Amino acid sequence: MATGEHFLNPTTIYVSTRAKLNAGQTRGITDELLRIIGCTHNSQNVQFRFVDEDDLTQAHASVDEKLRVSVNG
Image 1 (cartoon, rainbow, N blue to C red):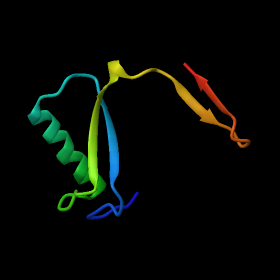
Image 2: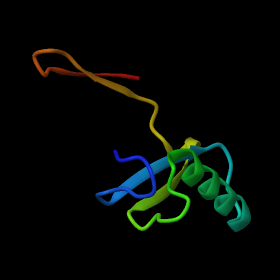
Image 3: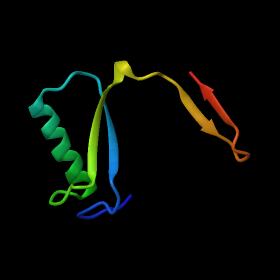
């Protein structure tokens, strides 16, 4: 991931929320996230996807040194 005024490649950032958001709340969160990652002037390659936490499956996947995958949850 690049830092500074732009991302070099298209990047999707997933944001989990606990409640449905209105347009103003979504914009405020987007502005704050862009500020945190340093893309306040040029955010062409950054796309945010807001996901309701209730819609997420609670699982945790891990990969060991032999590339074996295990899923808990």
